[in-house]
Structures are given as structure tokens and as C-alpha cells.
Image (cartoon, rainbow, N blue to C red):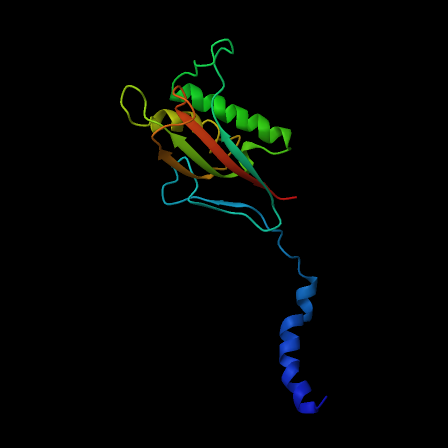
Length: 168
């Protein structure tokens, strides 16, 4: 190898290796970041960053369990259904060693109530705020909420799917 070529490669090699002191500095551990938007009172995060090293779990859409198993078509109103669904999601995550604080993204599908024909987002958000952004569980997921024409069967007013991520 010629001296000219070695001299040309030397700066690149120094850049790749970095300064000697860099090897002694601690590398920050990547973490999942929930970033709030301009409205801190919003029930959702503006964005959530998930490092490549995270374990990611995709939860299928959940609907409410019947209030009384003997009456499968009695699911209750939007508030009751939301509580049932989020409780089921919480139990599913706990079974995998995760928590509601590990949810990074949710998609909520809602139909209009029989009375108004419009989704009852206020009731859904009332229950949602008891699971996210609390003193016990301060994380808020990124979220989309859409009104759809129909869900699986007529008494179903809401379906929620979630993505959770946790650093190993």
C-alpha cells in the first residue's frame, strides 16, 4: 500500500474508530419515548418512538364481553363497552409480562349510538383517561379514533386494537 493511499484512508479510519475517549463513555440505553403534543390535557400522545431493540406485540381488535354471559347481546353503552375492552387488554398484556403503559399505539373503531347516529367519543375518552395519563400509569399511546358504519354485530359500539412495545 502506498503512503499516499494510507494517508488518504487515515482520516476515515479515525472517524470510524472515533476518539479514544469515546470508548470509555457510557452509551445511553435506547428507550420508548411518549411525546406529548401542544395540548398536555389530551388523552393521547402526539407520537411514540420505539427503538429497534424493543419487543413489539400487536393485539387484535377487542370487543366488549357481555355484562351477563347468559345474555350475549347485552353489552351496555359505549362507556361500559370501553371499560370491558380496556380491562381485557390490560389482562392480556399482564399475561405477557407487559402493562397498559407499554401500549404505544391504539386504533379505536366506533359506530354511532342508536340514539344519535354519532360515535360517543366523550364516554370512550372518560374511561380511556382512567387507564392512561394517570399518576399510577402516566404513559399515553398514540391513537386514531374513527367512526365506522358497522362492527361485527349490532350491539357492538366499539372495537379497540393495540400495539405494545417493551424494552428487553
